[in-house]
Length: 118
Image (cartoon, rainbow, N blue to C red):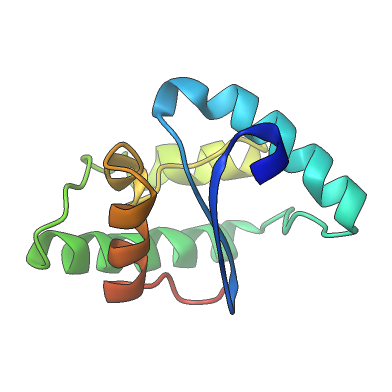
């Protein structure tokens, strides 16, 4: 991702990439190509139950982020979140607002309030 100009930080458990929300489409295209080249597969498709659990986990992380002083966008309704996932879209993340703060802030937020593995 760095060779494509993304501000990527490599860590033991993966890669953190910070980008502005306006760059979402370009990032997702580069990410998909990177996954294809590296053999990493996306996680879907999810079931309704898995999407429901992911929503609950995201709300818990959002609360943690707020308590730690990080910005958090308002979550969508549970129904909207699940529909986005089932339609193959990219759902709301409690980290969305932190992305705009830069890679360093995102890394701090992710360390303080990690998403549980699903």
